[in-house]
Length: 218
Image (tube, rainbow, N blue to C red; front, side, top):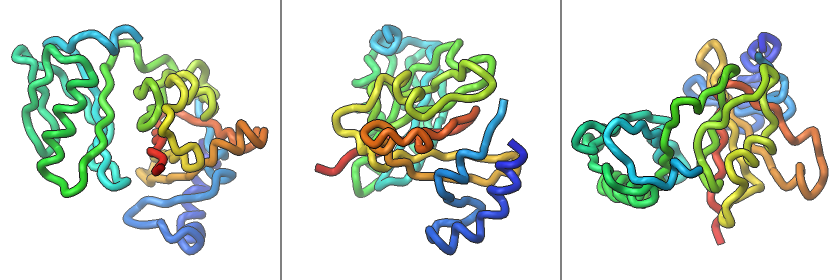
């Protein structure tokens, strides 16, 4: 972990010159550099009810406007969300609630937002933490780590139900925030792991990592 932190800090300026994306305390680096970091169903389809916890992320034009916001339904079935305030989703399935939230946020943006909404279960975070898989997978949400060594990207995607048909597998985005608060993001071509059999491309994820699978433009 400490080796990754030191190298991540030293590489910020260098990778900024290469990728042109080191801004405001965030950076992007190669998959190789990112891999240096180490450290130790059915509920989704029921109607939402008061007391349920949900986790929401909102993407607009490729930018995460709301990331991993957690809220609990009150006795009226309302959740309080950033920017838009109270939204009633009680009594709805997740798909319907996602549509209502997207419509509500859509009033604030020119282009329609993409909403990721998951029901938060009490045991979603394991003993060694979890990673979060968002975007075009079949079961977006948190994936608990099964050991202190973390979890491979391919395994996390599998636990998340695999890719949706519209997933852009050539540009899987993995974000990490280190102990200094610096955010680092890498892009992984998942096809190199499966089709090309490049095991080195199957990066190791650690507690707190966020995996975002964008939509393929047909």
